[in-house]
Length: 228
Ligand SMILES: *Cc1c(COP(=O)(O)O)cnc(C)c1O
Image (cartoon, rainbow, N blue to C red; front, side, top):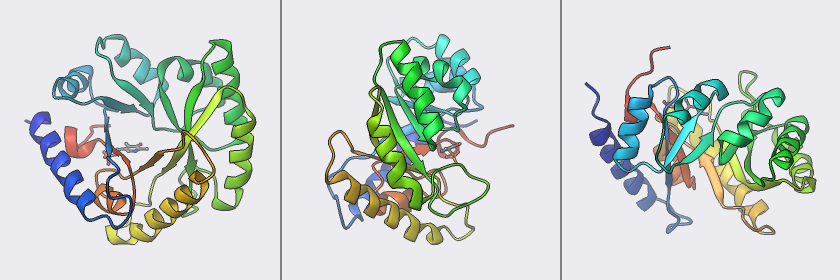
């Protein structure tokens, strides 16, 4: 049996240890997003009862069903890829969309947000390692996408999201996290409400935090392995 409460405690401890190893932004806190995808509502509720304030899901349909039976106040994060034709549902369901990676998608979210009178908080997902298997904008196209998002009235750009490659030696992620943080700090200099750097999952969150992440998305370390 997985103990969500115990796992959460372990993860929180590790987060604090990694924070203490930071050389920069030493005081910035780390938001823990508990990733409940492929787990039932009971697990989600257990985490919330144990104090979790942020929930991450990667599929619209699954999230819609699970959120229906939730009666607690939590912040809802869309961490997975979003198709433009699902933007309408996404803006109703989620407080923060982590996966904006194209002008088309940004425009679709903007339109959907407008239609319900919402300013949608978003992150741009960056594919620094240029992995074919992953979504995210390449670094050389980032500036253009930021400008496009800025031009849309119903989006608020709050930061960046990165998914690091699944290296067998997790230390290989470090330069990517470091580079992402550099870009985040640089871009943030001239901006307001730009304060979220979403990077780090179960296998790499400690290094991500050491390199500046202030939001981590963790599933397996809290809920155990997922059965697909
Ligand atoms: C599934 C997922 C996570 C959580 O992964 P774990 O390895 O289970 O911690 C984090 N971020 C994204 C984008 C995901 O899809």
